[in-house]
Length: 474
Ligand SMILES: Cc1ncc(COP(=O)(O)O)c(C=O)c1O
Image (cartoon, rainbow, N blue to C red; front, side):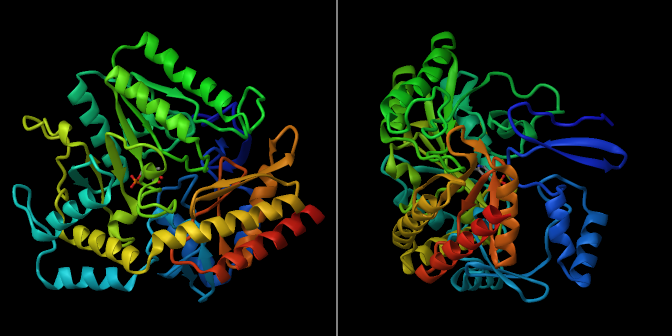
């Protein structure tokens, strides 16, 4: 076993000593990790029974920096909330992105139970079933015009790889451009196009031909340009793509999230220009909406804020928050692979998953959750901007719909990332019943279920203000 693992010079480092006699250094690029002194302090506040099950979990599962050992034991996930062993409930602002219609949405649960009762919970390959046809049809109707062909698979990482395989097959090229700091899944190809060393270091060479560029970030642009000069900043970021294209005629696809997970919200011009570059060079534009699809950004799909991609990649809430399911929706002109199988999965037409997906869409429609995300997203964003005026620790607030990030800085001028403070605030909010996730070490991400209320938004703002005040005082 090597002595030093996963060293990143770009990200602040945390050292976890003496784990199986090995000293690990783990970068915080993905978010909060489970080996810090503050995590230990938080664990110490938990009761004996909870600690017992956490130890059992840690005894049998392989340890991983972003999951095991875990932070708590859940007994229920319902609506916008998760509940621990003691019945304490937390408003969950993370939900791994599966909870757009709320956890355990009653309509989804009923649909899944009915599907199980119907004795059609699986169809072997070479057969189809009515729920999966209905879901494919519904997705073609819901997604922007021009996206007409569907393939399903169990998980988001696989869906990303189907999209990449499609792009490579139809163009006959093999290179890709994607973004540093992005996450597209844990599979080998998905991790290769992802931009985080956490998922690649230590595995030898990744997929060749996977080029990366920086995602347009106006607040943290590396040229020191004023944030409001979006056009000038866009030009610099677009140039990174153009330089690669100049020297690589064999690029099959550009893959990105329309809005990054952080989130950073690019200008419309940026994606229009990328779309133009793709059209000019015969490249497919692939949008990963595994987090942003299904209403998260205040539109059914985040691409509706920008341009229509050639392939839209969906996942997470597509499984209704109860089963794993993901897929792609692609333009009709790419339905040309009758001689290949890029989506050869055991569960590619699973009727149970399809029933969950259909019910999720129905629940989002019935409860008008897309509009709720737009309205309450604006409300939360404004509340956070008001907090920013009172707390210089908040360097920047960004987002669209209920997809918001709060960038904490220890110095508003240098924009140095306030890593420790972000972690303190996260645990403080946990104590107050608000479950947050930190990304890139210092950004508090807020992605609640789309069914939250204005009162709950006020509670988030209030809890955050209390936590900020305590950290500032300390
Ligand atoms: C933006 C994005 N793409 C892809 C994935 C991978 O999805 P899955 O975990 O279902 O493989 C994730 C998962 O977190 C994600 O957030």
